[in-house]
Image 1 (tube, rainbow, N blue to C red):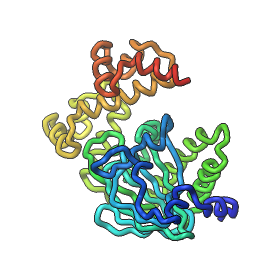
Image 2: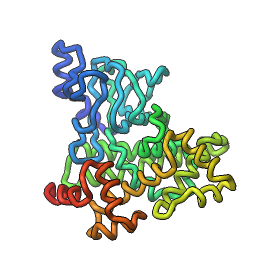
Image 3: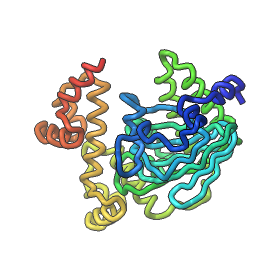
Image 4: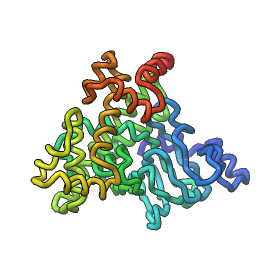
Length: 326
């Protein structure tokens, strides 16, 4: 264990000092502006970024809550007791837990030597990761989890538990991530994104090695094939071609997708197209007509309507907002 990191993380934060001084109720204003359900909001932490790393406050129980982002818990030292949905889970030192934005959990108070790190991750971060995964990973449980989180298709609470304390490679990545969190250099944010991408790949590989002989459920296998088809063919994706892949009728494919995702095939394709269009607006200088055609829309007016409905502004307004921020 890195001695410097341990010493730094053992220091009490302002929130922890307030708790030690007698404030034994979670200050919800730090986490949410909502007054009804306890939903921790990403805007409280992420601002304009996609990933944020912070130490979980010790000495206090956290009531049942959910998030509007993907959360990752990492136990740097000690143990971490929580109830996820209705299941009690104890994370040991070095363990990792991923929770999507629909799962609820409640957390037991950490003691002084229990150091837990929370990673707050916007679902959009994983779009790039997924687009670069090789087909060898397509059946992984991690992929299914991320697809659910990004496509919002079932709004079902899910989590993935990784007892990876014995994996030197994963622990080394975590140490590097925490060092970048502490140092906050000019390139720290970029390094954190690259390291997080590497971590996801390592977790997928770890899971594949562990579960290589385990047969995936038919529903998971079906959905991952559907998502792979959309990832590879979103520009021209259609139900007829997908039905041929499964040697099934269009009606059967359509009904299966609707029953498993609560969305139509068209909705899933549209979600992917708009995600790619948004990335092109951010990372390319292509004109709007070219972006619309690139993602599969020949009618630019229709593309504008869909984009505005999804993101609350036209593509041009979205682009201008990015330019002003720079």
